[in-house]
Length: 264
Image (tube, rainbow, N blue to C red):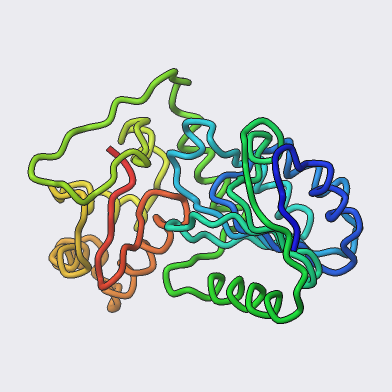
């Protein structure tokens, strides 16, 4: 075991370069310049698997880059979305791992003061690799595709760049974080979504509370049945659209049939 202190980008890219099978990463924030360098540096046969926190607000503010995810997917990588993710783990060939405070950004690798450990113990590595797989298969995790990224980009393309984001205040809500809620305006979302996606989004939008349940959204079944009389699986279609809204960063699954709006 070895201590890892900032800057550690040279060590990181040395491990990327020397990996012969796989690179697995958990990082809530990912920037394009780092992701593109990973793809350019790694051996062509090496797979890249990323677990990140796909919330539209992260890309609206520039904390993370959609282009970074495109680089990984276009390099035959795989991306999972786990919105409650906070860990930063970098696994190389399942034989070495860095567990650190640093995201996959210039700040995380160079500019910020980050601290972590390099692990190469066989038994610990088995546990770390197993935990990575458990995160990928978590019931709240989704799989991000190039289409999800394109849809998110289409929403953001309709919003002028802003220096600051105004966030709302909710009365009598003390346990809900709103700092990661997309502040680019509902019009940019509604004008981009089509069909079932827009209908389900509009139903959720009409709910006054930031956290809602599946039972709350199922109250709109009669309305949706009237809109789509030939569909005999309205409830299943709602769940499908909720998954889609999660995977473009507009809804968070919070567990036990509860969901959170990620827009204001």
